[in-house]
Amino acid sequence: MVYEELSSEGRIELDELVEAIGEAVGAPSDPQAREAFKNLMDADYIWKGTLTLNRVDEIEPGYWEEGYLGREDYVPGQAYGDWTLNMKLVNVQFDEVVQEGSTSWKGSASGSGSGAIKNLARTVFSPVDNLIYDYEQIPWSCKVEPEEDRLSVGDTMSITIKNIRDPKGREPKPWQRIVVKVEKGEITNGVKTFEEKSYAFLANDGEVEVKYKAPEYCRESGTEKVTVYNSCDWGQEWMRPLRTTAKGKEIGDDEFEISCDWKGTIESIFETRSTGNQSLISSILLDDGEFKGKTSWSMDVVFKLNRGNDRVKIYDLKSARFWFSDEIEGELELEKKSRKVTISSADKSQVRGRNLNRSECNLELIIDLKTKTYKIKGFLLVGDIQSQGKGRLQVNVGGLRADEKDSDEGVEEYSEQIYIEGKYSGDFPWKLEGNMDEMEETPLEFQEFIEGIAGEVRSEIRWKLDRKGRE
Image (cartoon, rainbow, N blue to C red; front, side, top):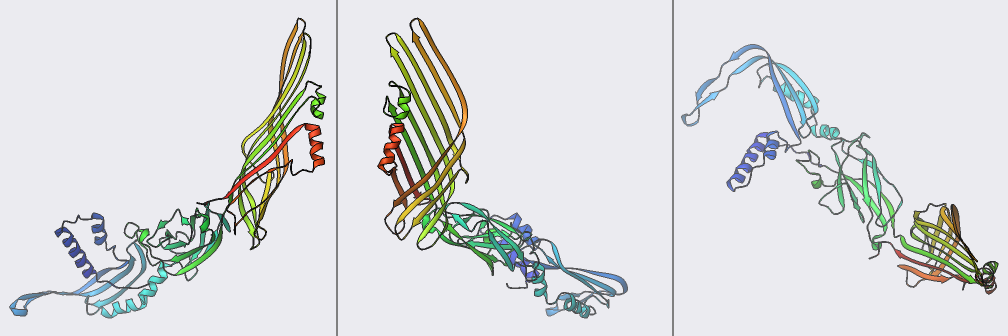
C-alpha cells in the first residue's frame, strides 16, 4: 500500500488540461467525471480547514508597490487578533471524517500562527499514513467455510467468508473490498476482475456469501482451492468499479474435493405366464384357466463419491427417481354346450416418477480398481403404492345372461434386494453397463421350483451408468 500526497492546485490544473485536450479533439464531456473532479473525488483524502478571526486587535491595510520591471504589485494587508484554525482529514469518497483537531493563537494569520499549526499537525495528525491505515481497517484475516467438503461436478454450493478482521481484530470498513480466487470452478455472484477466476466483493459487516459452481467436466475433478485476498482498491463503485479491484495480501484459504458422479438408469422386469396345469397358480383356475403377471420398475440414479483410496472407490446414492408398474391378470372360463361362465380379474399398481429417500432406497456403488470389478448393492422398500383391482363375472346359461363388474382400491408395498456386479477395462471406467438374467443366475433346483408355481418366468435387470459431466 502506497501513501501519496497530491497538490490540490496541481490536480485542478491537470483536470482542466485534460478536459481542454478532450474538447479540442472532439471527445464528449463527461458530466459525472466533471462533478467528481469538482468534489476532489479522484483523491482518497482531502484536508478541510476553517480559519476564524475571533477578535480584531488591529488592521494593517494592504498597499501597492513597484515590482519587477516597474510593474506594480499589491501587498495584502494583515489582521491581528485572536485566531482559531479547525482542521479535518476527510475520506472524500464516502465523506467520513478521519481525524479532526483545532488550535488557537494571537497575532497575524500567517506568521504568528505557524508554530501553533505545526504543533497541531504534530500532535493530532502525525504520522498521517498510520492514521489513515488505522482508520481504513483493511481486511487482514478471515475464515473460509465451504458448505460441503465434497462437491459433484456441475453442482453448486455456498462458501462463507466469515470473521473478516483488520490487524486489530475489528470488522473492516463496509466499503473495503476482498478478492476471492478459485482454480477450477467459477463464482456466480461476485464481480469478475481482470485476473482469471478472481472475483471482487465488498467486505460489508465482515461476512460474505460466495456462490460457487463446480466445473462441468470430469477432467477438472480433484482438489479445489479457494483463496481470499485483501485489496488496496476502494471507493465509490461508480468512480472505481469493482471489476478493477486488484488483489493484495492473502488473508485466508480452504480446499474441498470436486468429485465425478455416476449418473444413469437401473431397470428390472419380472414376468410370469401359465395356462392349464402348467403351474400351481393356473391349475387352481382349472384346466381352462390362464394367469399373467408383470412387475417392472426403473430408477434414474446418481451416485456421489463418499470415500476411497488407491484401491477402491465407494459411492453413495445421491438421488433416485422411481417408476413402478405391477400388473396381474387371471381368467377362468367354463364352457359346456350352451352354458358358459367366465370369471376374470386384474390388479394394477403404479408409481410415476417418485423421488425416493434413504429409507426407501439405499444403494452403494463399489469400484475395485485392483480387480477392475464393480458392484451395486442395496435394497428397495417403497410403500404407499396406489393399487386398483377389477373383477368381472359373465354368465350365459340357457336364457339367463349376466355381466357383473366390480372394483376396489388400496395401497401396497414393494421390496427387493438389489445386487449387481460387473467388470470394466482400462485404468478407470467411464461407463458401467450391462444386463443380467436372474433366472440363469439361479440354481436349477430353485428355477424348477419357481416355474412349478408361476409357470414361464422371465427375470432380468439392466443398468447403464456414465460418469456425470463427461464430454
